[in-house]
Length: 173
Image 1 (cartoon, rainbow, N blue to C red):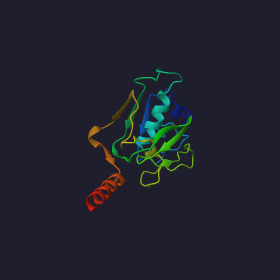
Image 2: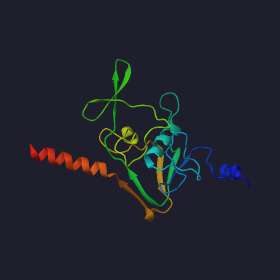
Image 3: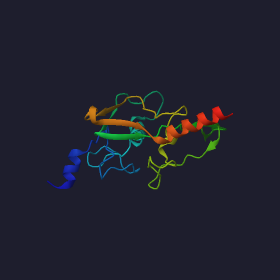
Image 4: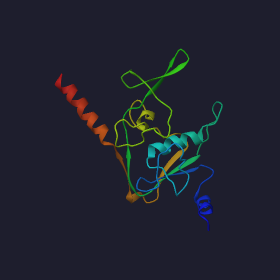
């Protein structure tokens, strides 16, 4: 069987299943990857959540698709960058982005050169988190693991370091 037919067989064309496997050699968070193929999963849950929101969005009001997408996690350790994201503010009809402290920030469109590496504190993925901290799971999205006993989700170390720094600032004053 030619590889293209095999890949078509393993690909979910409806987009209702997105695969995440951080240990797969072909896994990538690239903007051109849709994550709907067993042969090319996403590397991170956060990138899969962004793609799931894209799949569930429909033009118009009050018509987003419910129960649309399942994110399948392969066994292993999945890291999440849990830092507070950016808030969208209406500035005279234009979108303006602010961090949790109210400082103006830039949010560029995701491209091939965007930084998706969760081990790098300058990655792009945390910017889409909630302003209060934590990833946003779009409505209608389920996260499931192939083997729940062997699937672990860890918070990134940056969050823990930030908490310690905040505590030091509070108690040193």
